[in-house]
Length: 275
Image 1: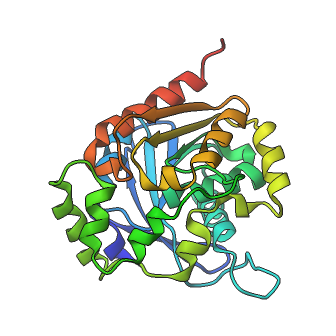
Image 2: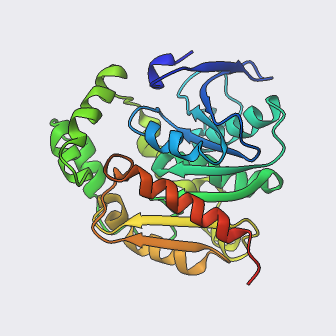
């Protein structure tokens, strides 16, 4: 169990394929279920706790090792699809038949897997700060920051409020220096790789049957890196709702967790209306 990746009480479950997942659970008193995937739940925890005021929330750690069954032709693990399959298998193991899915950045990737492979389990999908990339990449600001030797420099760009830096550094210390893994750059910001071709992904967006909610911050480096793709996704995802917050950075969960939570609530509430 990867208990260090969760700030607070953690649990684990062994899936039918033998893989172990670590997760947290909040809001058991609520009827509707919301699942969120992430590499870790520390600075993201205020968002999870906020969502639990209205939903029965499970935060599932997206893993980098263990048994896998979503493979590339060369035998390597296709982590983008594996993270999604883990979420689906997790829901089935716990007897959850329908749920809302919320992902932030890398956490959106399992949601896109579910959109493609198991839309029957999705009530809604909040894809925050990331969309499939169907246009040429505009820049590489985010990964240049990630590749830098000074993590504080990246954090200074990624958050609006400097007091969040302390919490982020504490998170990295709890994780043992972060989660360096080639799968991060290969799959974590590439939900379009869930599909075999970009044309198939494009067709899926244009024929979407699941309510999809996008949210971005205007000074998020990752938003700028994929600006054309993000605009394309917002304009071409059938029935989607898009929110762009002026002056917000990539680490909105540190700068304004209540606003992130409220945007999820508003999106789900809007999805239930018939206009």
